[in-house]
Image (tube, rainbow, N blue to C red):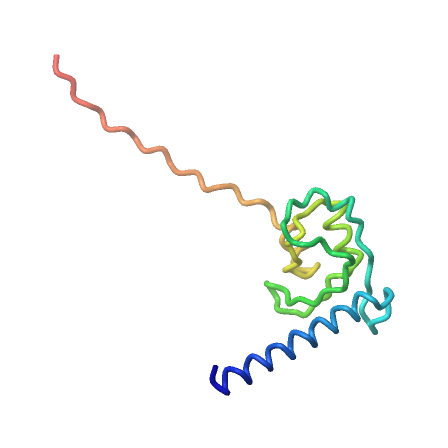
Length: 129
């Protein structure tokens, strides 16, 4: 292997070890240990509706996202995620995409009825007598 590839491989391995340490520290820290981030434990029994091959979450953390409509930065609270996944029974891979204001605006709009197409007259067929 070339020296360049060896350096890239070593750098990648260091990044993986650092990420594993950070993840382990996050799991070991008690809820509320991270400043400004709320953490709520999950209930695996209520997540049984999710038929996923991946692991189910051990807890929910506040999630930062950008609204798809107004581009404002929002927080999806851990308690809201717990309700969404465990009570509402949503798919575990779904995430929030709109802020509460934009969701309310969408829900307030009247449902649009599909435009009715005018009936076209059928041409009369000439019948031979």
